[in-house]
Length: 226
Length: 92
Image (cartoon, each protein chain N blue to C red):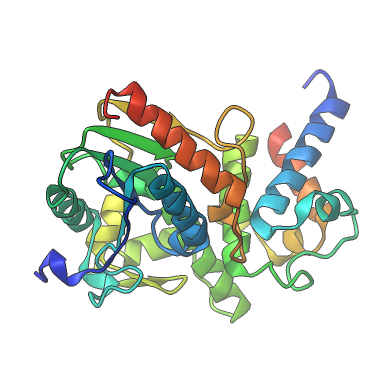
């Protein structure tokens, strides 16, 4: 196993000693790319408000040299445990979408989750993208045939090489209970903004990034962290 | 179900909002979609990943389950086809 220190992380520090460190657990697969810019804007806003903000690369994602086919949700959970263990002072874990499926084993002072989703729904979308692309190229496949194949071979889904373990874990993964947790959606009764993780083409939303940073800062205070 | 007109307009609004979210259309472009507006193959943003995302979001937001053998190219040809399919699924 490649040591975690081999993975990069983006870290934005405040001027002076941080009030606490916010570890952003990004969405999984393509959703991470669609949201990255807005999440980094939120990190800048957090740093301006006195927090350190860290966005780690998960093994097999972003700039990681680990092949995606070698990782699964358990390995991502282990990787996050190590990331948070290296942090001085209180850590607030802020997970977005599928990030909420891998954030529960870390030792954190508080958790914050934006639009958490189940693994089955993420997997279904990836399988469907493959079925649609297959149909366009005259190949017949179905969710069932792909899932059967995934029991014994690496499956290439929308550019993601997923191992049998990854597919099996995703199909069953739900966000696990943690304490203290604030879970919030997007829209009228949540963070004002649009679900950028669904967007076919990359976008950014600076107002949403500020709203994310403010909500995390308020939650940090509520939890008595700072 | 007692107010089919409301039902239909609710599905129409949900579908437009969903396409706006997935395709980044903006409210004006989403509102301007007509029955004949082309989708897959016509809107450059509408690729196979977008089709997959739209299907999963339709399931979540409309409370339906879509079997993949119900999905053929025709559904995504025009906005009218997609709306008709959604209304049929919601009524089931």
